[in-house]
Image 1 (cartoon, rainbow, N blue to C red):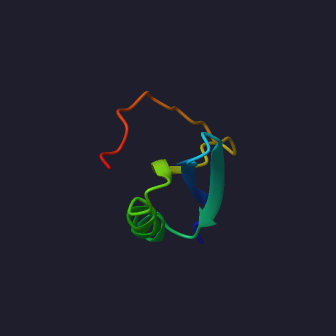
Image 2 (cartoon, rainbow, N blue to C red):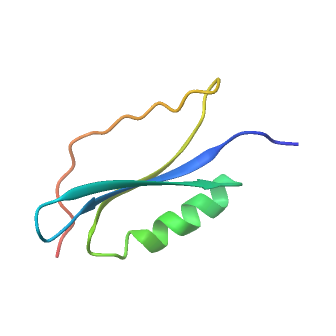
Length: 70
């Protein structure tokens, strides 16, 4: 049994200028990537990534990226 925890991290940028982050767990990287591809079609989504726990710790690295084209 694979006990690895995969999460999708979605960064939002709302029209008001507010920002938010949503974290959703998944059973597999494939399902996470599928959901991430759907999330990227939302114009309010600034960035989305799938990540896994390493030794029980979720490590995030956010790099400055150009904004999505409108």
